[in-house]
Structure formats: C-alpha cells, structure tokens
Image (cartoon, rainbow, N blue to C red):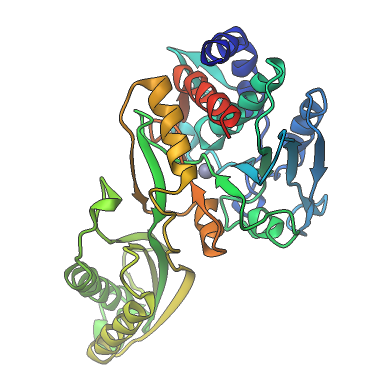
Amino acid sequence: MIMDIINHVEKIKDEIIESLRKFVSINSVNPRAGGPGEKEVAEWLESYLNTLKFDEIKRYDAPDDAVEYGYRPNIVAMYNGTNPERTIWFITHMDKVPEGDLSLWDHDPFDPVVKDGKIFGRGSEDNGSSLIATLFGVKTMMDLNIRPKNNIGLVFVSDEETGSEYGIKYLLKQNIFSKDDWYYVPDSGNPEGSFIEIAEKSILWLKIETLGKQAHASTPNVARNAHRASIYFAKELDEFLHNKYNAIDNMFGRIPISTFEPTKKEHNVDNVNTIPGTDVLYFDCRVLPQYDLNEIILDVNKIKEKYEAKFGVKINIDIPQMEFAPEPTPKDHPMVLKLKESIEILRSIKTFVGGIGGGTCAAILRHEGLPAVVWGTMDHMAHQPNEYIKIEHLIEDTKVYAHLMSNL
Ligand SMILES: [Zn+2]
C-alpha cells in the first residue's frame, strides 16, 4: 500500500501544485489586518471539495461585522472510517497575513510564481502548503479506494492570524469536536520535517504608554520627556526580565529560553526639536510554561513605579495579549507515535518532539484539554517577503498525510 500511495501522489503532483497556486492567488488576508477575509477562498475550496468523495461537507459561518459580507467562513469535510472510535481532525487556516512592504517582494505576492523548485507567494507556506497537503492526502485515499478505520475530518478555519475568535474558537462552541478525538494542526515545522511540536510557550504582549509634558527641545526645564523615561524604563525592564526569568528548557529546542523583545514603537513627534509628551512602545514576551505571567506583570508594575517617580511621568501598562501556555500533549500520545511512524517510514529520518514560541490553533485546543500536535516541512518563510514553499516539501508532506490518514 505504501508504494501505491507514493506513486499516486507523484501522479497527481501537477494537480497539487496547481491547487496551491490557486490558493495563493486568492487574497484572503485577515480583515483585522486590513484584508478582504476568507469568503472567496472558502467558496473556491468548497466547490472543489464537492467534486470529491467526502461523506459530509458543512459550513460554519461566524458572524463578523469586520467584513461587509458579515461572516467568516469555516469548512468541515468528513471522510468516514470503516469502524470509527473517533474522528481524527486535520486543521489548517485559510486566512493570510498582509504582504507587508511590497518593495521587498520580487513578484506580486498574490500572483504565484513557480521557480527553482519553489512556489512563491503570500500564504504559500503559511498555511497553504499544509492545507493543500492534507486535502490531497485525503484525495489520495479516495482515489485509491482506501477507507481508514477512524473518521478523517478536514477543517479549514478563518481568523488564525488575529486570535481565532471567528475560527477555531467559534468551532469549539459548535459541538463538533469530542475529547476522545485527535487534532493535527499542520502550521509549523522545520526544513527537515523532523520536528513534531507538542508544546507552546505563554504569550504576553505589553503596551507601555508614557505620559510626560511636551515642550520645545531647547527648554527641557519646562518639559517632562516621555521618550527618555520610556527608554530608561524599557532598558531596565529588558535586563530585569532576562535576568530573573532565565530558565532553560531544552524541550523548546532552538530557543530554549523565555524571550522578551521590545518590538513596535509608535510615532511620537514629527520634528526633531520637540520633546515628546507621549511615548508608546511594546514588548512581545514568549515565556516558558513554568513561569506565571501574573508574576511578570507585578514585576513590570514595580519597575514602572520607580521610573514614574524618577522622571515625573505617568506610565500606563496595557496587555493586548496574554495567553497562558497549556499543558503539553504527552510525547508518547498515540497520535504523536502514529505521526512519527509515518514520517520515519517515508523519510528515513529520526524525528524529535518539542515546543515552540507559539501560538497556533493547537494551543487553543490544548487549553480545552484536547490532544493537539503540530507538524510540517518548511523553511520558516511564514510572514516574510518572498514567502515560498519548496515543491518537494509540499509533495513529500502529502505522502506523509496520505500514509498517516490511511493508518488511523
Ligand atoms: Zn499559520
């Protein structure tokens, strides 16, 4: 059977590539990042799914005023097993992040280009490659008349890139998932395909707004420089957090530590000769699960008071995002072992399990006590200009999914 699967995926290779190109060509940028949303890509997918042998295809539209058509589509397609004990879900997302600075792209991000064995375009890796690979994994089974023991459920969600409120979180309220089910979320991975993700870090975003008093730059005596207070505060905060929360957890592989990164800086004043009365900057913190985010926030507030007193400013701390790391999926869970087996048989490589900085739909599922595993073969091109997926990775992942699904 394994040779049948490999040969069949090779046979339909052009169709797989064409489908990913079609996915990339439809702009489905998340509306909360300024895009048109997932309606068009969902309609294309649904019409394609209807040509295949799925036992049931259902839409779950989450009402949302952010788009003029009023909803965010989610699609669930079932391929029933012969003697099911559970449903095994494969969850991928239809939304994309914006193209960003267009001048950094060599091609139109929504007009996919095939070159050097790669497909370029926004969404080609994140999450197009895995969406298409899981879809053609099922199609391969259908074409070969293979029925797995358990039900296979493909789920195409909206809104992964801005919090999943209208995607997986909406579906979790629709009574379609069960706690005995398994949840594969192919949305991250390494270039070798050897990394299986079972854990994610906690996420904490800090918005730091410093309020002082604006004045001409030549008269600092009548000003309270919000920018100076802000950078001194940020410097101590940066050093303090790195020093105190310095544990190493090798389960998190390449980045086995908590990270605290100053990122966005809001515009303050237009001209060089004005002392800013307001200054806003942000930290993105990815924290090892062993730490309590509330303790970090207490520390931030303590240091904040010191700088308020020192510079005579007011500092407001907002928390735009705070996600506690869920319990990891056990590394010997049968859904991990089955995936390992398929990868190792098809690739002749050794796999390893570990954690990442987060956050995919898997973290949301783990929060609900559901076992979720993330895997894929990719070059870490997500959210970057000239995003691409290697065709080889797309095709080899399709084989792994077809093998895994037929073995479930
Ligand atoms: Zn993604």
